[in-house]
Image 1 (cartoon, rainbow, N blue to C red):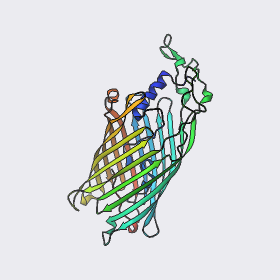
Image 2: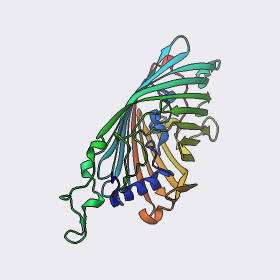
Image 3: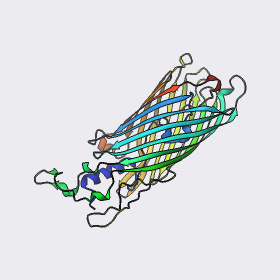
Length: 379
């Protein structure tokens, strides 16, 4: 089966450059505002916030200046927590993600539920005791994913017509056996995660966690049988297992200037490993929240991403991928975030450093003040 035309091959190369992979293995979608998409990070993050219930939206667009169709990702999150027993909480959440890329509309859709148990390890004493707490959170995720592509929108080498059209003529037969491919694929998803966090006074906190995604390594292949090249030789296989993703993350908040201070620092780091791909993100944000205006906060931060860098079609190395500038605004129960990725890898010669835009929006419903416990602040 002559599966890859010049256009499809070029698209595969661009995807490899962008994802930083050494071979054509499926990878997960990414957000630069990691903690604005908690379900994508760690199921133990569901419900870890000051409030009873939270609704969130994420949107990311990239490569719009270089490709006919931009890569777009959108997510919806609904999560919360409820008291259980004397001092603990039960966290829960629902999340949905849709990602679409390229002229053929290759898409990934995921729906899932998170649940976790938030066990209190320590409670401070006195009137300010709730500002000094420690929790251990264990959570899991179960969901359903779908991958799909519109094969009819692709062009193939057999359709190349340089004399009369000078491009691809879709009136020509593609020569492909479309009975060997499928339009979409459904698969189950299972993730697990663990996190510890502690609060040590007003606007002083620390957290650390780890998660494993795709515990069942689902088959995401869109082929019924192994494809063949123009010589009739098989390559690859009809089964394509999605590699497990290992995520380690941590950070905290450090108040500057004592209890009456308005500025705080929020350092953080996220490391992800999936198959041949490695991604390391670290940075620092500054948060301004005046004591007399505690319903308003402004955040500004800069993060750096290090990832696999394309060297040849079969080789890659680790290098600087992008710098991320993030601006956030909190007002009452609303939280808004905007970030921009500026490319620093070899791709900057292609896109002139233009990377991606990302937006996030949360609305938090307040909880019962009597059972409210301190939670860490995330970037």
